[in-house]
Image 1: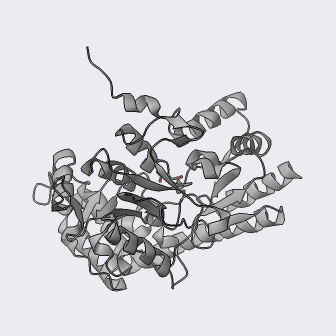
Image 2: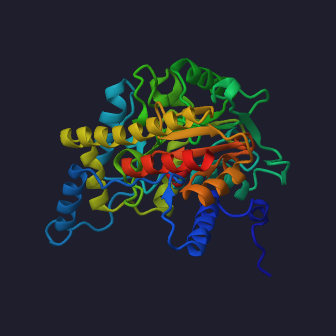
Image 3: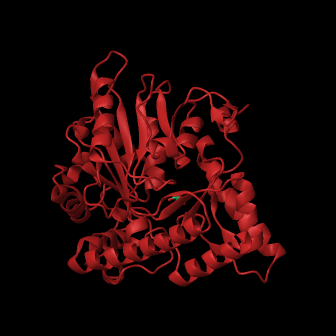
Length: 407
Ligand code: MLT
């Protein structure tokens, strides 16, 4: 008799964004004439930057000729892209990351979900609450938690991120092995200073722990004093792995390209207490389970770092940041407290009511989709998240409708 992995049975209903899509589809079916504006999932709406599209097209043409055709590429990514990433995203900011520490993949969601399989099942996990649900759910699937009680999984260390701590969690009061951090944060939009990240790096060193740093939204940082990478913090290379994505800066949500940086100094320990480098283990996993991102997509991603690409990406990100600003202003005028928006595409709103109730009200009364804060953790109860990823026109329309619905 084949038995299933019973840890899956502990998971709560379906994945947050599938739940939202289901409610939205049901609403649309019941109200076929209503025009819905989606400010829920952080999915981009503008076309790819011209520099990326040109590189994409010309790489597709190369695939048509025997002389320039490419079959399987290196699992870790082509050297041209790994070199461009190391140089532009890290070395240019004083972080000494080499191209062979960069692993190109098809998404930060997959990488942040998969990385946990390198670590022991009894690893103690700490994660912010609220936060992107993939970190938690993948650890539940792997059996690192007990059952779900009172809105939380037993055995997990939750790091409350609330208005009181400016949505930057405090260090855990008990020792933990693996720490997830995400800045600019999804969903609160909060950012962490160098001093704040330094505390986490020091903690990880003292406790022989590892930080999994999700920087998928770093392109939205406009405050130059803020770090864009954890590797801007001294000593972080020994205790941190970083995840990045081309989804939110260059609009690759449907094109799929991301990368993970695993420094060679980064260590975990075997049961005898010996240091084991993580880099060869992630490399082994990557080569066994992944065959690389397609050549045209990697050429399109490389174009992000061209002179034209850099300018176009700034424009793209700026347009979403201006949307975030419009949302924040309208929400403030309605008398709600909010966080985020300044260095992030998300606005985190204290809704003064149950977050799914707020979701339903916005959908039914305004035809606007948001993300209920509760889906990101217990501390998200009472909040909703609005995403700035849409056209200016739709954002203006959505905020007018919200104002009317709440009047
Ligand atoms: C979000 O809305 O939180 C993100 O778009 C989800 C993702 O990037 O997978």
